[in-house]
Length: 298
Ligand code: GUN
Image (cartoon, rainbow, N blue to C red; front, side, top):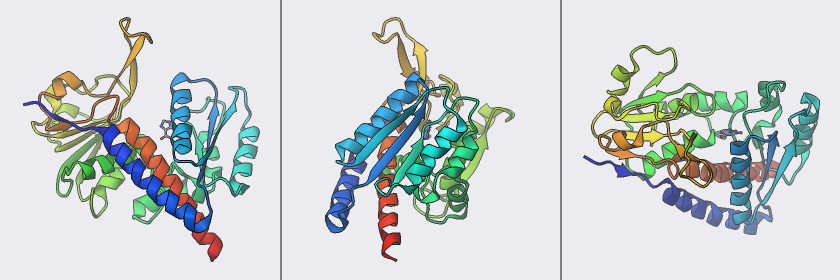
């Protein structure tokens, strides 16, 4: 059997087209242009590439967006001052602090300083709590993109056994919460595996839906996968490749070659989850702009 390849790029384009229509209408009725600021510290090449894509996605929609760059040596107080200024800036509806940060900065404290209403990443404890309670709030973009892929691809989740590998705050935990929630793209029986889990193959082989978010190249071999399962590969790992002009290429957390022989559907890397993350960031930014306009009317 050969798996159906889930075209994340195509689905992300559809999401972005809908966001554009909605944002244009919002702008026509309110005069408000959505605005997103991305704050980045240091020179991590992957992070640099991601933030450029995020800004470009905003500019493509005709939105306001800037990248605010800080050197590796920046102090906690300087980033705090930046976040305070962005919290107070009415042109800014979304603030994204690109992670990871250098070790000397207190990441959690900075994330908690972002106004929950501008927290387009959904990383603020207030928004994490709201997600757990099933209340409306910004939800982390990659998990939201994964759920949207499953919905758009008509992959049933209700009553299915979903296994998430990885317990990060960015992907593993929030995607588990989404799959657990009542409603479309939810109602799954969810299991989260991590580095201390025992006999992972025995758990993974039962998964109707497998979400791999470990950050290790080709961690999951095809032999672990249940025939016909839906496999969502969140990994974006650079591996050396002398044949490539860049000297590296991107591979996922799943061994695509063997997994695609067994799975029913699978996301490729690149072109699977990655484009969805940015599309959902645009959706979250528009939602924050909308909520801000509604709040200022009250
Ligand atoms: N680093 C990797 N993924 C993300 C993300 O979704 N948001 C932020 N802020 N940083 C990241």
